[in-house]
Length: 211
Image (cartoon, rainbow, N blue to C red):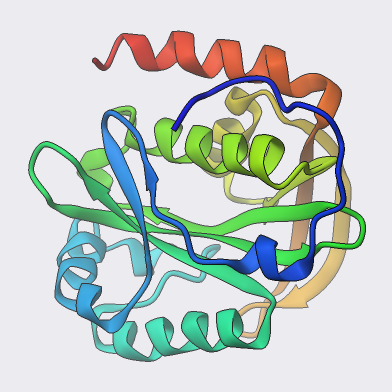
């Protein structure tokens, strides 16, 4: 899949936003999520016990079947396009990511509900996953803006989003309730169409060191 300029604007239907695709990079492939990925996802989430982070909503191993069903159900309802992330060299499943909060009429989508196995963090796999998703959004879907959201207290996630080249739009105070009953302040970031060429160039530069 080429990483290039976004091209001209054109009308995109909600169906095309949610049409299942396989996105292939040099390090990773993003595959449409299914229950066939369950065991690999359980192994990945155990790498770092990611579900123990209180400021995230990452499924524990016992809840993985339910989480896969939830995401697939949102896909069927037309609000999410979920992916499994797989390394190309080993075939190992290393995480999950999605397009969510799809707004086809305004050509806007959020990249979120993402987690990556601890040992894969800072290896280039997450950077390339984001590059694949951003390229598809801006080039194939003609998005005007792509949004990212994270818990204000998730400093690692906020820093990673900023490194992508996204700018912080603001903070939504106490806008959602976490699984433990605490209130989440949500930091909102976005990349807009005019920023995409520079973001693409920088992400490609960063990925070159992992190849």
